[in-house]
Length: 499
Image (cartoon, rainbow, N blue to C red):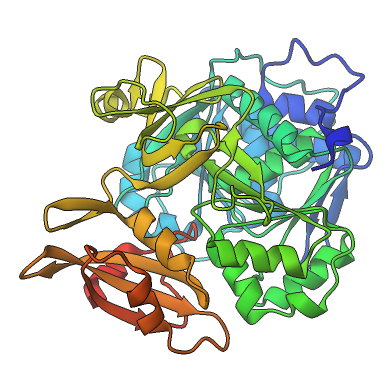
């Protein structure tokens, strides 16, 4: 980590009285800031970015929307989607970013849940019938001088955005994220990652995913830039774009790094400008972390843990492959407090496993229009993450799996995370997933789906020998890749259907 850069960029213009998060970003965008569309090379800089955010704000207001109105922002990995999202927030509206694929799958349910006044999309599709009773907006809006249109006045506790959770199945919930949540989490992430000024991120994730949004927020907040590139199905194109645009940050979920290791020219394409890899959205196996560090030793590899309900990130660790902390999710961010609690909510001592709970300025107020779910997850200021884990004597967090994601073998519960961590540590395993299957003797047994590293042989027997005797393993299937949700998480229902 570059300790000299561990600071929030100072800004000469007055911003202390601006609680509107998008307004703060606009104030912090200097002449060197940039938003770039990698496939076309379209680039906006400095004042043009500020004016385009203000232009979207003005356009939404002229269309009849007012502060507090919710607007569904259909956005992929595009500059226009980012500008529309920030423009709506700048105008005091509540953007609800959603991927096109999720919108198409759950359209009626998403609209019923969010109850927006309008829908914005990157481009109108001729003949497409969206929702006739809602205001339909599309495409870029003309820029407006940001000095003539100040950000809407709001408080830190006012709603800034509604973010869909990235659960693997069913209708996602909407998390209420305030302007204060965004500022607190953004500033804490900047410190944890050592983000300096003039940084530029390669973004291959949609901003409808809180991980993607946090990457954009942090880099613009530091006066830097973001390159949007939706072409990761061709990973070498993205690697070349990192060099073409001088990117300093690359972020991805575990599946992204496994693609880089297995299906890209990472080892033969130098990345001289890259300073850090950011990994979240699940655990990348220790072997994957080691290989990334070996191939690109000049870039830090930061392992992070987070949830949408905590705005984005909860903890961070700069992976050191020589450390006994490899596999850890690091320490909590500066504005958060973590504890491990038992089923009665009592804090457990270091080394004992329980539910990971967090509180602090990044923790959101709850779920939109869902008081029962809010009461179950947000208690006395603490977010019940629903994840099992422990903290060691040094305060490092170790995530073991979901509290509701376990396999009961002969009456003993084993978390899926613990199983997958054990299997991922076996030499030759690139990544793996475990699901329960019925077993006549054990009640439930383990079905493993394993992606082998290149050249790995005899892997199934090696894995079986590595498992504890009381773990009944019904099958080990070698696969080319694991099925994923749109946010990159393992689609376990698909694996259960195959078992």
